Length: 270
Length: 348
Image 1 (cartoon, each protein chain N blue to C red):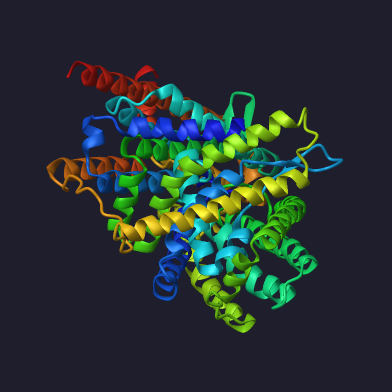
Image 2 (tube, rainbow over the protein chains, first blue to last red; image 1 turned 180 degrees about the vertical axis):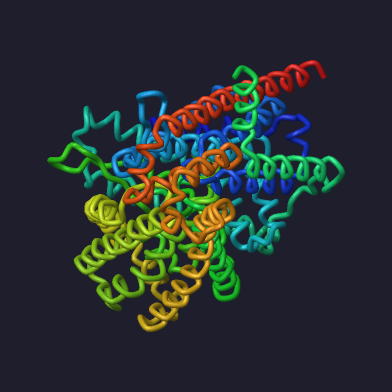
């Protein structure tokens, strides 16, 4: 029960965030999707032992969170929730990759630890980038941007439909699941027998609902496509946004800024 | 199991995106042309159903753990492969965008692993063959379990291949396979049981739902065609991946060649000291951790590196120190920019 309710709350909260009204929110969704994709591509194309060169990329999520008034702690929490899986796979790197790579005095750090850290930084950046996109754009405009990028119309309709009914069905499933939990003291009664009829009944109700929705859609003259509200055009702001960030990402990717900066400073004291 | 952005390389991500996007386009075409528009709301609502059902679990007797529905197989049995693939893809997209399950670039991998294998391979080649034309409850149950296991084994194998091809994780192929396949055998059996029991329920209550799905467009596929398609995919993938994969080491090789003027480091045995020193001098501008390259050839380089130790250690320390200093500074600057932007945003 709790997982369904939490998931729903998260969905709704992200949707509330996306309804904000800042310069970033007002940008054309297509611009934001393009910039986010390039961001992720630049981050993951870095060498597996890369650490320092990844750090400048934090500028993007940080700037977006700040400018779009997103709650940093909420995003951070969502990223941390995802980390265990990454840790599970990444933790094998120090085990299998023991070639010494960096030396601090007597302490030798193996390549495995470096790449492990690199994986963590990568996941924080990529997950953060995706949340920033959804938190400033919302699901429906993102889908429409993807449609403009060539996503088939059937699939766009499917995504919009799915998203609309997640709220309805997840609430229903949450209530049903809660009822089962309350009736089964502890876990007794949560076996496959009650699961079968719970999920089965939910499925049949879903099926019936789909038939009613179809009738209602026909009555309203549905012809296979959702009509969308005309979004703001691709103007000067969008072009500046796209080119500005793209140039910055490519610059970050080609130059290791922290290393240059560090060399400058340590060289200054040397 | 979902692939994550942090574990894949751009080449693998791009190849899998192309494969999944192509399949989505093909399925969309099939659904639009050959199915009545009644399927549109059905697909949408069933996607939401799978989304919710994945979060309801049942306890597995005597183990203390719990299992839940995966959804791919159930959708394929109810809707047929084409529509089911689209629904699975849409559920994964929502999960990637809102719950960071996987990631945007890994989405291609995830759609392929969890959508393609059950719908286009396991279902037509196993489920259809076992369940046959005349339905019976035992047949459905048996077919569901075998198909779910097979589908998940293929998906897990896909995860292993994609991870190993990306070369971000250091897990060797054999170890990863030994970890993944047995776990997914268990998950597959549980998923098969859950699917079979739900299908059995639907079969009792509304058998016509299952029988209409039987008459939906069949997948025009034979084992031979699938093998041919896989062969083609392997050649294309192999070509693209090896092109990308060879690009990075070649870049390093090229640098070494540039610096030493020689083809490779082995040839420069006598000039090893000079090469190492040059490499490390060069390293300050090259973030690619070139000394990894030197370490990779232990037979020649370690002995030489030992004699060179004081100098190179000093250099490494210097590089690490400046790396850390610069890194911290970069983060502080990024944070300050964010803080400044927020303040400006608040005042305007």
